[in-house]
Amino acid sequence: MKNVLTKFIYSIAILLVFYSCQEDYLQESTTGILIGKVVASDTNIPLANVKIETSPVSTTVFTDENGDFTIDQISVAEYSVKAELKGYTTLFKPAVIYQDRKTNIVFELKTAKGSVKPPSKPVLISPSSNEVLKGIVTTFKWSVENPSESELTYTLKLYNDKDSNVEIYDKLTQNSFTHENLKLGVKYFWQIIVDDSHNTPVQSEVSSFQVYSAPKNNRYFYTKNIDGNFAIFSSDESNTTEFQLTSEKVNSFRPKKNPTANKVAYLQTSGSYTDLYTMDTDGTNKQKITSNVKPGGFNLNELSFSWPANSNKIYFPSFNKLYSISSNGQDLTLVYQTPDNSFISEVDVNIEYNTIALKTNNANGYDIAIYCIDLKGKFLFNVLTNVKGASSGLHLSNDATKILYSLDDQGAQNMEYRRIDSNIYLFDKATNKHTKISSDKEKGTNDLDPRFSPNEASVIFTNTSNDNRSAKNIYTKETNTATKTRVLKYFNAFMPEWI
Image (cartoon, rainbow, N blue to C red):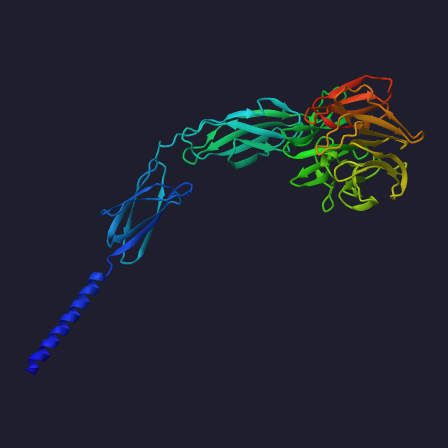
């Protein structure tokens, strides 16, 4: 009986062991994971919505926006994996699935021949054929039809008739490109090449244009508003040689020419900063002058500086301080600080007669004061104090005995800095008399930013409606108040300089 019981227990134990082994075997995984990525063979850009199938058949999946796909719990076996997308050649790749492991494959699909229509031949728009540009800045524009809505890139090739250099600007994604440093007096040839990465690149015809030889002896300089940015121009007496000196892509304004250096200084804004620059009278050789200390005040459009004819120093305001700096950007010097911390907005300097004229105001542009100091900052005499309203334009005569300025006779003070009746005045130090020159001004307009002519027999200035929105035009008139004839010089222009 004991032997029988022992045999029975032994048999039960063997059965339990066998059953346990069977259960472990049944629970063992017989699947793996297939992962992969699909990209375009020519650009390596991931392709989305690619259909992924296997043979033997398993789960069908599609790639995501990153070109990735995953098939979970695919049976252990050898497969042929197919990647299929409209417009591309279908591709097969082998894959072996191992138990509890990931198998990774990558597809590089080629564009199917004839599946993507090429872009059209580029049509060159501007500069137009044989156009003569009156400036060293131009924006190339062209058009292309894109029937397949492919991602296009452009290459601009630019040749000239002076040398063998070829300027190449590639990987352009817009159908325009601005060139800011063309050569004066040069004939150019240009061509556009468009590439959709699927077909052979398509070339445009070749077009040509000429850059005007800049007049270097223009005596009038002024600012214009072009598409919201200020650009500087020069012209002659008859306005037949107007030439754009700075690009409308940046904000440049308030030109001042130094006849001795034969250069033009001006203000230019980049982001939130404004700096002094100089350039040659044909718009070349632009150089930034200021760096750590920059021109500043209550309103940059109301800010002015001075570059005396017989000096290499440029004088500029920075809030309550007046600085001088060499025209090469060296030797920054603090010249003067207002005793009441009022802002300096305008300055004019006469080196020969040891005189600096200043216009100061509060942070809102009002509480105007105009007075003169010497080159060491010592007070000399007052021109204007205790007046209401806005003022603009400040110019010393050659002998520093007369000062030209404008003042709003209505004394308006408002958040928009709007003037109602701004007139030009001439102050005579000898008589302490202020003479109104704007006797012939139309009602509802303002005379602003007056400057003497080189012989001081006339003044040049800006006139505009007092609505603070209308166009501005530049006029001249004789300083003799009995002469009521003002002459329109330049349309849609302001901040004049006549030298």
